[in-house]
Image (cartoon, rainbow, N blue to C red):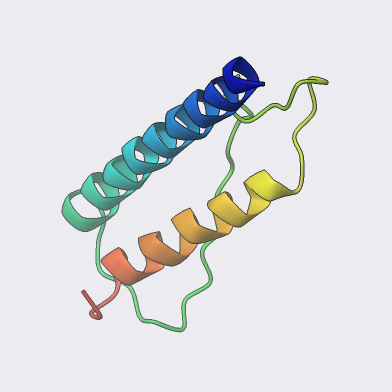
Length: 83
C-alpha cells in the first residue's frame, strides 16, 4: 500500500512540474514576445496532446482541459494591460 501511495505522489509531483514549466513558457512568450491586446479579446490556441497529457488508457481526460483553460487565462492576463 505504501508503494502505491508513493507512486501516486510521484505522479502528482511530475504533473505539477509540467504545469509550472508550461506556465513559465506561457509567461515568457506572451509577455515578452507578443503585442499587448485589449482585455475583451478572444484568444484561440491550438495545442498538441503530449505524453504527459494522457492517462493510463492513452486518452486525454477532462481534467487536462482545466489546465489548458488556466494557460489561456494566464496568457490573456500577461498579454493585456492587467499585468
